Image (cartoon, rainbow, N blue to C red; front, side, top):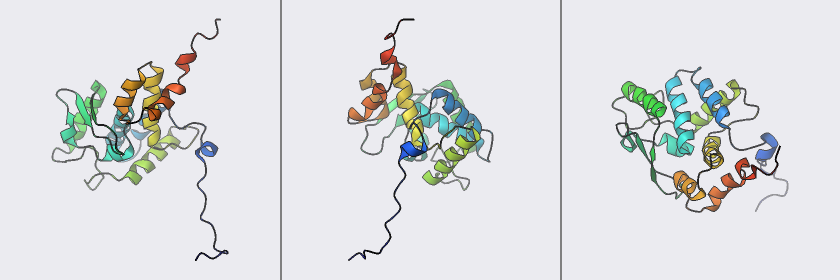
Length: 197
């Protein structure tokens, strides 16, 4: 039986009271990545993690679990295994991603995981959250930044670029399209041409 005098656990502060939105713009991602590459002992790793997470809409758990057997640098492909019951897919990689990943591979040729801790084991999600938060403050982004904002940034970028909702659903690994629709609902592109100036 719970005592009536027992204090209630602290309530989680709603995200809207801390930040005005839950995604980053493409320019903010660039600022975040540049900040991560300017400070700390693992600059290449941190900058690459931000780039890969953004480009492929990875959750933090998917990023830290990324292994070299999922990456084909020769064909510039990445097999993305989705967690949370998502659907896996194979994504093309850009030249910049491949260049950064090749540099990481040269530094740790025998590692199984792509993103390693300083002790050469897989990174922990708390480490990624701290790194992203620190980079957000260094980049002077005016609200607290967390890793999942990179996944949302990917969805909004693809929607703003006019990609089909079903294609975005497959790219992000959503089983239910309702999770994808939020990106297209907030896209300003659907309102283009409402006013003629």
